Length: 552
Image (cartoon, rainbow, N blue to C red; front, side, top):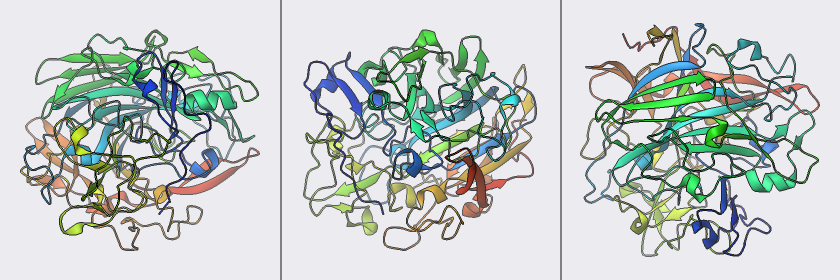
């Protein structure tokens, strides 16, 4: 179990007027309430919004990350790496009555965000060896074991945020995703990049690291008119970038959403059509929407945003079309962000704070002798119970909780609280069709794979160089196997075959062996300092012989 470190960044406490709030775990002043004050999401600690890097110690000096079970989609069809369509069904939650009843759960407690992903070009991002990146091209495939001269890479996540708990931007900019609305879902286009040259070991200059972060995010909510409500890039982003607006597309729990992701001359465009209500929204990763690269200038003294249209990196999707700085092996994938919620109950009140950070820059913790867990599973709180919020701040579900990465594997995500058909106590599952590609979205992806990055997180037990001690059921901080680890299954609805995530659910087709579905340890190659390479076990992966859940 990783202890809570000192979070105060030098010079982070600033007067109210000219807020430049770099939410890096340093103090966040009331200046953060100014819509014009600079704000960015800093991935140098456990933000659930950030892509998991392959080697946290190399990048940050300590472990940063989160649990990400995923389903991957493979196709050799040109365009399958940059042009596809999905159908989603958003979960419905149980009643808000008696929200802390033992065994009761809500979508926000189980997963901070669900997302659809894709590898992207960013010539100012890792590995900083090539100044160009031809979009939508498999010429960009390069194994780090062959050469470090890969094109610069970013990763796109179209994230969906559950309703009802602490509102944006309070939790979101502090640790992870949160709620846009009391009852409705929202979505945002995120693109993650990394300012690091792995050959020389140089990161960006200190001024730019302070302003944008080493791993940085371009972020924009999906809006009804397709225009970003504030600059998306981390150099120019403000509080308004992360604050929900009536301009955004909101979706009801239970709605069916058709999502298309396709490249355009202005950059990748995400389009959402609510098939239940008829509502539509979009966001294009374009310079016109304030998307930008962060100039890699390791010997400089300033931070420059380079307006940029972000385009997909690859033509196809296969085990070879990966982002080589990321822990996961995928290009086209669906992921659920788990392990970011722990209950905190007892006689001591969690203080209400703007961002889960106190006036000294330290994360709020589960106080006093309060207990973590719920029902018969309660136990004394511990050091990963931080970035805590009182239920009084919640929009609907008045539940006290802590949101740091649950490295003790005993939070809500690791209990039998997942969708299982009992909708009185548990939410319905997030359901997802397999994507389809081709000019009219009629071509199936031929294969699927199931993957989880547990080895990267099991820092206390797993040797990522050898694979020794890495387990499919992670160990809690008391040395026992986690009570539960969620998994994917398939079922058939009136709209065809869909993937779903959680526990065994009535009428499923297959659960692929539950936890065994994630397969064997996967060895991936990463660029090493000096230009060589090293190998790491960051994931378990199971490549299925076919796509078991085609739409047709």
